[in-house]
Length: 107
Image 1 (cartoon, rainbow, N blue to C red):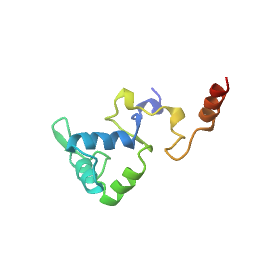
Image 2: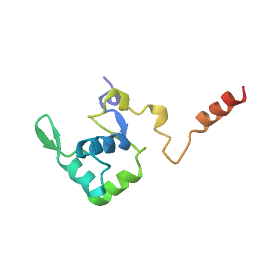
Image 3: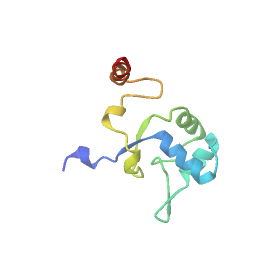
Image 4: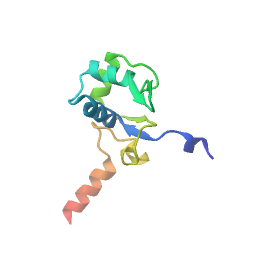
């Protein structure tokens, strides 16, 4: 088995934020996101969702970059980020995808 196949799947931070919002009942503030991520319950134990405690400042950055892919053991198959999507953020559009959309409109 290669090292690559042992890596956890990637998911966008937006999916993590959405799970937090679902757990607390509304869009989280940075303080709420940090508290939720630092006290996440998994299999009956409390774990740090990001592998270590995050600060409120880090939670602010997370909330500003929902399209950033991160490794996540908790990612469900429909939340996986594909290799092609890793180079595209919420501020940058894939040129190939934009060109394909334009070609489709011209027809």
